[in-house]
Image (cartoon, rainbow, N blue to C red; front, side, top):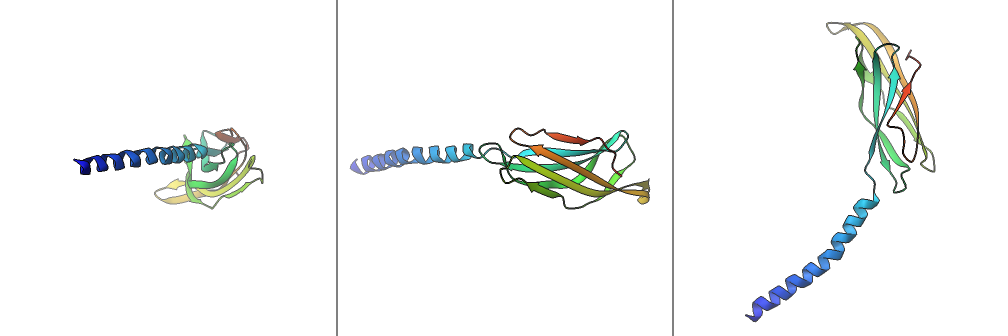
Amino acid sequence: MRFFQRIAALAIAAAALAVPAQAALASTAQDAPEPVKLTCVAWGGGLQNENWDIIVQLNPDGTAKSAEQQGDAYMTGIGIFEVKRTDPAKITISADGRELKFYGTSLVGAGLGGSYLYTNAGTCRATFTFPNPAKAVVNLTPAS
C-alpha cells in the first residue's frame, strides 16, 4: 500500500510542477502575435488585377519584425492575362518596424495554346504602416 501512496505523491508533485511550466509556455505563445497576410494589388487598367501576397511576422507591439513574399504573383478578376514569372520581391522594414515597403515585379502574358502573343512587365509598389496595417494596398496606375 505504501508503494501506491508514494507513486500518488510523486504524481501530485509532478502535476504541481507542470502547471507553472504550462503557464509559462502559454504566456510565451501569447507574446508572439500571429503573422498577418498583406497584399499588394496592381490594377491592370481593366477588370483584371495582379496581386502579390506578403506574410509579415509581428513584434508584440504590432510593428513589423520580418516579412517575405508568399508564393508567386497571381491574377484576379476577368481578363486574358496570366503570370508567366514572378521575380523575388524587394522588402524593406524601417528600423522601428512601423513601415514596410514592398516592390514586386513579374512577367505577364496573353496568348493562345501556351504561346504568348503579348508579354509585359508587372510591377507593384506598396507601403504598409504598422501597427494595424491595411490588408491591401492598391496601385491605381496601370502596370506598364
